[in-house]
Image (cartoon, rainbow, N blue to C red):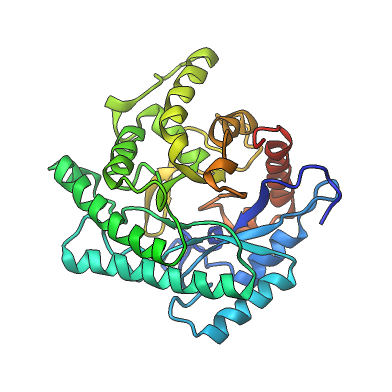
Length: 346
């Protein structure tokens, strides 16, 4: 690694941009393999500093969620061979993977719980191997039906909360914590206020917290899928932005146990089977609305007290040509080093 004075937080790259929104249907780009994503990540370097690790999606084609222990240990060995650790894991909670809607009928909810059990099993194998010593297991409501949620918002939030409580109990039994990633596309998690209501309804802060992504939470600020919860209006100035950002982060930061560095241009984007959500932009996108370092500082205050040891870049639904361009990763790594060097962590 490097002799740089700041070695915390650890800097991770996500593997799922090689998968999310990719596929073999018309108009879709093919997935990028785990090996290639690892190679691209390992090649990035800024002033002698490199990525420390990866965050990892537990589904095909990167991982069979039912892979044998031997196969999982082989994957762990491969990750270590690049000099990386594993941090947070993404449970395969969505319909069409292992899971199904946390707001659904008992059969759907049982599938959701099963996906968390499979993720906990893999986490245990990685932990025992030694490749993983920190990080969470990421979930969401796996329910695109925001309109369906609105038909009886209180009852539907209560159902999601009950599913999450059951899942968090299982995670706690495995020594794991769950982090629910707020995005405007997930029912019951589609605005900062609805996300907060859900976290408070679950009420298991030791076992279930919030995963913040800078791109997604920017759209929370705009009230994109819940205008009644908007904290800024179009044409806001910097003073209004900072006041609104503080309001949002003061509410959600105490719950935040996992963090994604990202950029957003105020637009939504979807690809493949993934519904429209906050559009991830390159770290240096001229249309990016966020001062990444400044915004990260709001979320990361007190991070170590909440058990956080790393931050991760998320650039879902980038074109493959962008993902395969080495300059993309050097720019991202540079943005993450700036976050680390800002001192917000301590």
